[in-house]
Image (cartoon, rainbow, N blue to C red; front, side, top):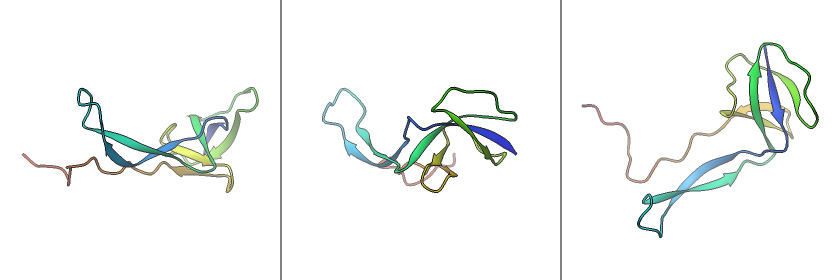
Length: 97
């Protein structure tokens, strides 16, 4: 079992959709970001914890947890994978060449 360093001052966001970019010089679409409720950033995952300054703290986690790809739910005190982003407009899947 590994240890996850939790930063309760940083909430995570997920891409729930895309919107047309009004600035034609940039990308065609911009992500729609929504803050994940009760989320706290998993800043690091290691084998052995070391002393950290508050408000950071350590929790036990599974061996497959990866920093910034998982978050700590402060309400349930569980580590949860960040949802995958909504598909980019115009993409329906991968193309095999």
